[in-house]
Image (cartoon, rainbow, N blue to C red; front, side, top):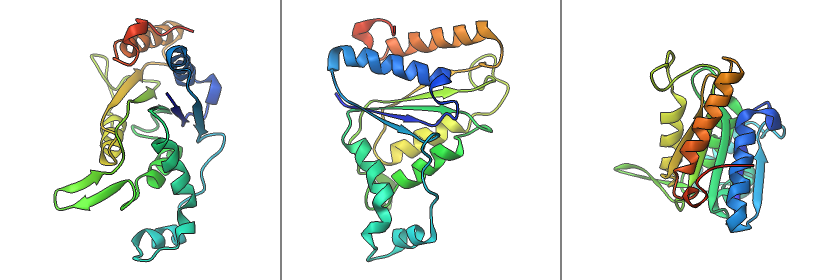
Length: 205
């Protein structure tokens, strides 16, 4: 098994989501002995979308070199068997770094086709885990703010064929150490119930 790990947290390795992702990768590695491709969108930001890229997207005979970054990111997904994304929730939705990755990965005629019924994904589905870290609560009984990240990202990933998205929520991370411990425990229990991890019963370092 080959795993692609996409990090969008500006806190990098010190973020709780990053640590959880590494736990998941290590657990998978116990049985898969596979390779891991890391794409850190925070420490190595992607270049902004340019006018040349925008023109190439709509051209009937585009300059293929304009798609170099897009193609590299798409190939990273295509050549892996599982995808793990670690992202914070910024202002109710995805951070700018992850949005830019999405803008490069969602490419007409390459990762999706336009049909009368809407966009149809051209990529093979694979297990996808999205770790969402937030200071407050946006899901469950304690929710007090909106969540535009989860439905948006589920729809965006699904539009290119990645329909098996499992969201792992780390909520209330600014509410003290006890809240962080509780959030991580709930997340580990949720991940352990996924078929890909079920044989291990728990996520441990």
